[in-house]
Amino acid sequence: MVAATIRRNTAFTGVRPLEGARDLGGVAEVLAEAFRGEMDSSGKRAVAEMRAIGRLGPLAWWLDLFAPLGEGFSPGFVWVEDGRIVGNATVRRAPAFGRGHVVGNVAVLPDHRRHGIGRQLMQACIERARDEGGAWVALEVRADNVSARHLYLSLGFQQTGAEALLRRKANTPVPNSSELNGARIRRPRSGEDAALFSLAQSVTPNGLKWVEPLRESEFVLGWDRRFDLWLSGRGEVWWVAESSGQIVGAVRVETFRNPTEEGRLRMWIKAEHKLHAALMEVALASRDVRAHPLSIAHPAEDMDALQVFARYGFQPALTLAHMKLDLR
Image 1 (cartoon, rainbow, N blue to C red):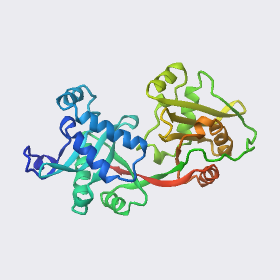
Image 2: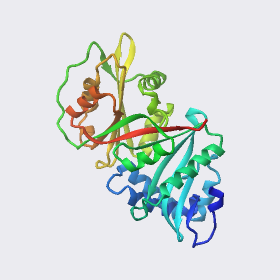
Image 3: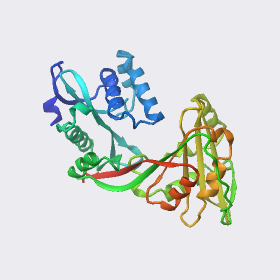
Image 4: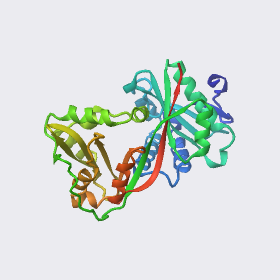
């Protein structure tokens, strides 16, 4: 299907593979318009980087030659109308989970929606995954995006879980908590990287691991990690909860040098330990952390935790449904 629609002239209309040097600028404009009003600071930063790379022209094409197979700037497809990019979808291998692929950035300009463009872009991505021996394809979509969810369901995707995103305004007051439940809150020690990663893996629902897998590199402690973060204008603070000599909970706070840029929290706690309030309190204890707008992503099924986050000023922003298509 894809090969039959590929042509190389400016009057071409249809789907073709995305070419980094040629298309990144156009794709950035599609994403900026399609997700206007929905994009967070990290999304805006990504679009800005795409625009910058697109302006490199032939140099961007040269750099893309050295990217690992399937992991170029934005592997995937675009939909072109008379030489203009009006739709985009990316598809990447998911190396952390064997023969899987992840689809992202499914976007069509508002004036070109409801013409089957999104479906054909998705079919191209699925075909690419099959051609590369993929066993499954996964994606995430706003739970309230009824039309997109209907499209994915019609293509055979099934929902595997949902993740809630909550946001907190800068300088929101912090209530006190004494809910330690027999645990001790402390900073992590050197050498506890593997324990933190194991905790996160064990408490994250399987249905949320496909689209955005946990990476061991995100749980590394030490001066080299702090130095890398400093170079990129970020800071990171960890707190852990220990009970009977075992780490049973952890929270990570990531902030940016720019005080207006939204920081991020992630929290992992074993189900039998009710430590969300205690860890949230220490995470927000620093005046510097409280001065930043913050977000937290958490499994939507964990209603007790979401209620705790609301007490600390985090308000629901959106819920992302994670969906998966089995190709076997």
